[in-house]
Every structure is written in structure tokens, then in C-alpha cells.
Image (cartoon, rainbow, N blue to C red; front, side):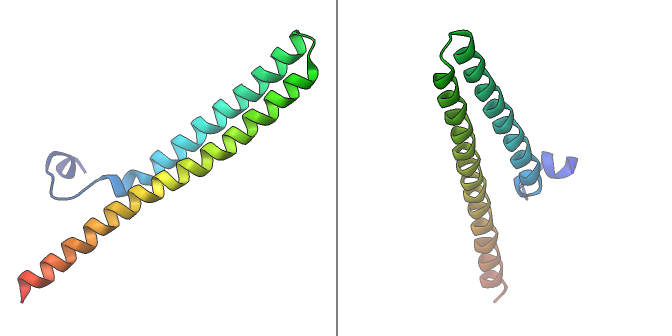
Length: 97
């Protein structure tokens, strides 16, 4: 792994994609929960329970949208690297002829 890190013959990103994805999911979930609780407690402390519920729902919807956008982003990264691998295979086949 260290050799791959020091040389640029292969990309290491495809191997760590899942780790990055799960870290991103954990952060999105953490911020969605903190935002929902913060909105709810702010609404309660100000005597506006309805506003707190709206903030709670908004934070949860924002978290769901964040998960969707994060998934699409990671998939696009994966597609770019798979295109690179396919083009590398095509180049290797052509040079072998």
C-alpha cells in the first residue's frame, strides 16, 4: 500500500471509496440529528413548538437530501475512475497489437 501511495501507477481512491462514503454518511447523520434537536430545543425554549417541529422536519429532510447528494457524488467519482480503468485497458490492448 505504501508503494502505491508513493508511486502514481495506480489510483488508491477506488480502494478507499467505501471508507470515505461511510465517513460522509456518518457526518451527514450526525449533523442532521444535531440540527433536528437544535431546531426542536430552540422552538421549545422560545415557546414556539410548531416552529421547532418545522425545523426538526426540515433538518431531517435536509439530511435525507444530503445522503442522496453524497451517494450521487461518490458514484460519479467511481464512474470517473472506472472510465479511466477502461481507457487504460483499451490502450494496453491497442499497444499489444
